[in-house]
Amino acid sequence: MTRLLDLRSISAAYDRVRALQDVSLHVDKGEVIALIGANGAGKSTILRAITGLIRPVAGEIHLESERIDGLRPDQIVRRNVAMVPEGRRIYPLMTVKENLLMGAYKRSDKAGILQDLERLFVRFPRLKERLSQSAGSLSGGEQQMVAIGRALMARPTLLLLDEPSLGLAPQVVREIARTIRDLNREEGMSIILVEQNSRMALKISNRAYGLSTGKIVISGISRDLLSDDRIREIYLGGAV
Amino acid sequence: MTQALINGLVLGANYALMALGLTLIFALMGVLNFAHGQLYVLGGFVTYYVFTVMGLPFVVAVLASIVVLAIVGFLFDALFFRRVQQRSAREESSMLLAAGLALLLESLILLGFGEKQRGVALSVSGVYQIFDAYVPASRVVVFVVAMLAVVLFILFMRHTKPGRVLRAIAQDRDVTALQGVNIALYSGVGFAIGSALAGLAGSLLVTIFAVNSGMGTAISIKAFIMVMLGGAGIVSGAIVGAFVLGMVEALGYAFLPGSVTYLVIFVGLILFLVIRPNGIMGKPWG
Image (tube, rainbow over all chains, first blue to last red; front, side):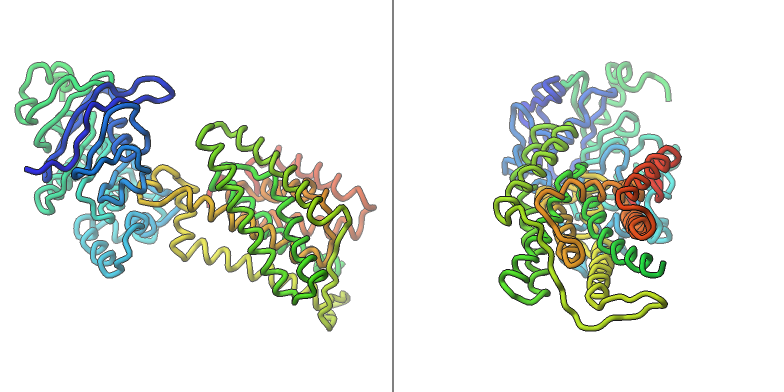
């Protein structure tokens, strides 16, 4: 398999408070990677570093053999990276259609954009019904579909999802898990999934990294980790 | 009475340009632009210079004001605001910067155009009679051009891709960067548009009220009143606030002794904000 993304010994900080310490991880083409860990463990910070929203204080990030740390977010996402941010962060005062078109901002192929909209409506029929409604008036699950749809409109080869299951009903979480798996299997999309819902994340990913206070403390094949005693204790808590 | 109402409409349309510019910059940058009045004054002086001193057509003078102010606005952002905001996330830093830029611009206007009060006599032949009021054609021109600019601005924001991007930045800066938008470039464009609107208002109103280098702060305060009345960051709010202030001002000048008008306006504003602190159009962002 070919290497798509490579983080080498990344350290990052917010206002001089260390948030990541010597984090190394990689994503191969076609892989689904899960980052699991408690709130504040540094999962989201990894995504923010990859997309250039924060600059690492040490280490290197390579995307397809090109060094990208130090680039601006808009330069990085132009290299076919898209993010579904934590808490959805849709544009509440724009219509669903305007939200989706913002996702296609960097594209100029009108026909392709229309085609991708149609494909998106096959995946999420409810978005078609809500197209001219303001996105802020949608339910949480529908808003998550808008956030995912917006990211897909960029035609990414690497999709970053930050806590897509947060605050959603179990059946919606299942629907989103299915979507993630489909995107990977049908379109070969590489995915990094950040989740507090560790069980769901381990079930749909190939490999996983477990974080604790800014460091990677465990990593391996997701299937193995699901039955690993340490993981059970720390992340799965026995319950659910 | 009719005369005062018509004056109010003409004022309101031009005030709307200022309020829209101010609210656009506020929504994009999170900065209350204290230099907004000085931008208006500069717009007036550029029109005076091109039309009266150089003797070129009024249309050219108006376009010159728009272009000069757009460039000044873009430079304001590129040279000052962007740099300060990169170093400091605190709002006070940007506010202080804006206040400093107001003084800078005021001094530059004084150096460039002198301390004299300057007005422009726009002679368009014809007087319209509307009920018992007489309206010179030049005022009709000023009103129509301002309204046209307001409508164009709204259409631009609603229905074009750059307009959509500016609205997106106002709602969520980081997420918009993640869609591939060069935020620094668009902030500059937004600042340029906001400044050009202030310059256009100055360019048009200089045919009615003369400008001088020291009046910028008073104009800024008017613009703040409109935005507070309507609700900060809201397009419809800026327009409503502008027409309310224009009307009240025109009626006040017609029926109250000179300096009482703004006393009444300030007292009224304070009472209004106590009752409705978010302005007429309510919550932010529309």
